[in-house]
Image (cartoon, rainbow, N blue to C red; front, side):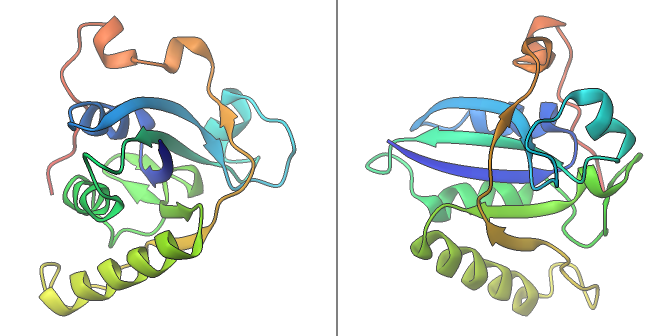
Length: 159
């Protein structure tokens, strides 16, 4: 198994999309990229911890590639809005790829460049960060599978 970690706004929607992928064995909502060694949702939500809401994806690379996961990441959020996804505003909702190794870094940078060259977003800059993986903090249990537990549709945002 391998790990990939993505921030693309509210982690409930990000988790929703990755859980549907063949080869993904687990998705865990959590926090990464902040200044504190420990954090909790209240601090992340207020934007005071510096953490992003992320989903850590465990996957079988013989069934799904990291590049396939990147495609899903790019397709399911707006990578041109700095620290915002729809009505969710703040650095905790930033677009980011936390790479776990050099191969992931290289793949993420190549995918970002390809997205820029595709002109899918016109002349708008792709603001997605590509940064080293940091300490992962698992979100509180009520955040795990939140949409399914509460019988809610995806919180996917239309652009």
